[in-house]
Length: 316
Ligand SMILES: NC(=O)c1ccc[n+]([C@@H]2O[C@H](COP(=O)([O-])OP(=O)(O)OC[C@H]3O[C@@H](n4cnc5c(N)ncnc54)[C@H](O)[C@@H]3O)[C@@H](O)[C@H]2O)c1
Image (cartoon, rainbow, N blue to C red; front, side):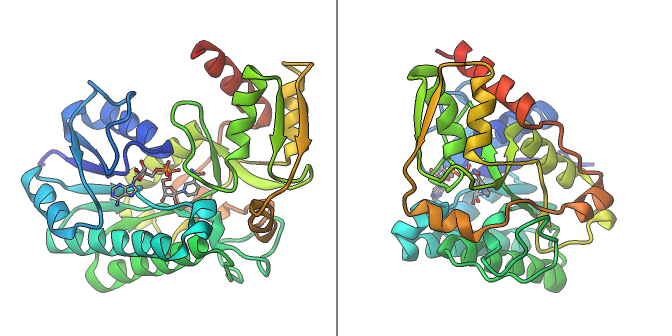
């Protein structure tokens, strides 16, 4: 069987860096091509090939897919929820056209698999707040959520109509220390750790009791790879799978940090991101992912807090 050759688009972002490094361990450094519009992330340098790609430039992307003998694409380039509200047209254009370019090229070149993440942002104020199910009322209020929901149906369409093996997860807010978050509503859960270590105080842009679904990056990478490696017959959802890690509020994560840094203090000054957060579920039901391909998270709030503080202290 021919070797897989993977293209990661948006490899310099919060997820891209860690996913590229994880894929390189599995498939070999030279078989995973990192690409991004911005320069190569420092952590990727020297670990494998990098090419500059604008996902909006379909011709350039197509040339690279052929030239590099790509068999799988992971598309991570997107504009996230909070940034999207500042420039809705740009967010819609990138999030939609970028996906359509990739799906079209994947179909034309008969690629084996495509990965594209959706988000809990597809859910809106009319979705259930607790244990939000896989299939439910979905009426997003952000341009980001609208683009993700539309994207889910494009993925399903390419699977149904052309047999393209495209797979997707609805990530919750992702918590990581390697690469900074890119403008989402859950970014506070990363900022809080940096500020706790550097300044022992943090002003949170969400109110203290705002519960949101979150996930430690290690779990997110494992979920992604487990989904992509599962036999195609196990994949019953061709829009996007709910996956859950942990749910907590700013008050709860602050209390957890205080068990390690007792003089850490938090204050609250909600901004426009509060409105987005209030529209999302507080927790997610991921039974279908668990049943289909054995999803199980490993990190709870206590464990991820220890990992974040330990790793950020080391990087000081
Ligand atoms: N981080 C989260 O908490 C989270 C939660 C849910 C879903 N997601 C989804 O996961 C994916 C990756 O998110 P992330 O947090 O790593 O985002 P990020 O903003 O950190 O990274 C996105 C990367 O895409 C690149 N990019 C932007 N425009 C591009 C273009 N035209 N061509 C090529 N590259 C381009 C950016 O330079 C950036 O490095 C996105 O689809 C996002 O919607 C993320």
